[in-house]
Length: 394
Image (cartoon, rainbow, N blue to C red; front, side, top):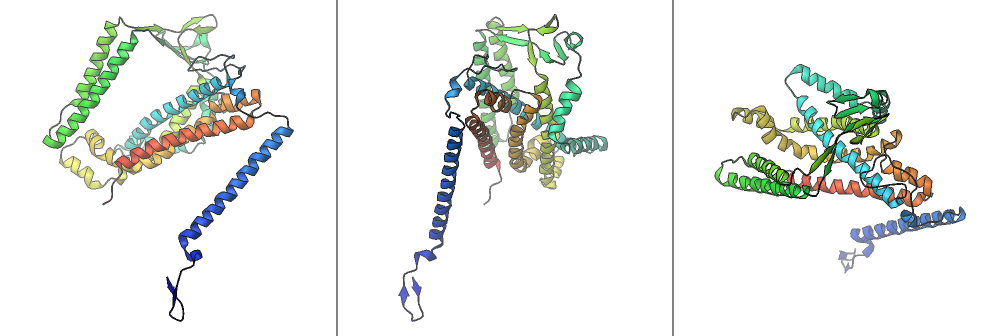
């Protein structure tokens, strides 16, 4: 209700309602975006029709007609485009997952030793960080591939470790494990051991809150995990066969080959991302109140325990948000694999498959959707962790 100059009251105009105007503005924007999207889709359809290009996703069930150098699942040139998509996706997830794990470990190590009281160790870590993170990632990928791995000797002169592991210009050759049917019992025993370890850790935390006493739950749980797995392994008559690589003719036969493209990409991704993660960790540790460190020293904590139990858990609340962004960056940077020929999603599906089938719109749309889904899943997982352990306001 409003009051006019004569003192009379009247109804407020709906146009003066801020919420109503906001709804109208949003509705107009949505309508405009919908019309633009519709026009874009219509225009693409018309142009494809004029060019004589058929649309649809039926091509996914057709034979691909090309080989892939690294396959984590069974694949041949007679396999479908959908199978090739899965192979490329698995290769992308492989290098991304390994990059995330290794860069996290190395990054935490760099972040901690940069704060070391030892002058030499601290300066070495600082120099390494500043050099690596200021060189473009693409150059690092090319450096490892062209300057380090390509000049390695051929298979006959390969570097070897105990005639079991070989390194040459064909890649890193390591023994392959073949699991027999009895290995199911070993896996089941391992799973039971993990459940017992988790249960002991949960019981120990509850007990410590009540009594203040600690129980070596993790050590006992890991010991049980090892014992159960070994018992199942020997009862199942060692259901694992080891196939070692052997030089036959001009190349190796048997074993498992880690492609030089994978090694170069993984090294570049790991080192580059680790320098940024190290800075996140270092800043997070420095943000922890100085009194916390002094308290750990007064209580007689050794530096390792002080960092593991007091400092790092508090620093993680500040490290996690930028860590999410860095993990997403690792996944997206893995697409640089196309430069050196590593068969990732971009190289296999958005490259070879696109050229073979000509279904550019569909393939690019699928590739974009896959990267979007992976990024959103990683973001959701890390945001859940961040919300669970973030500082809560009162």
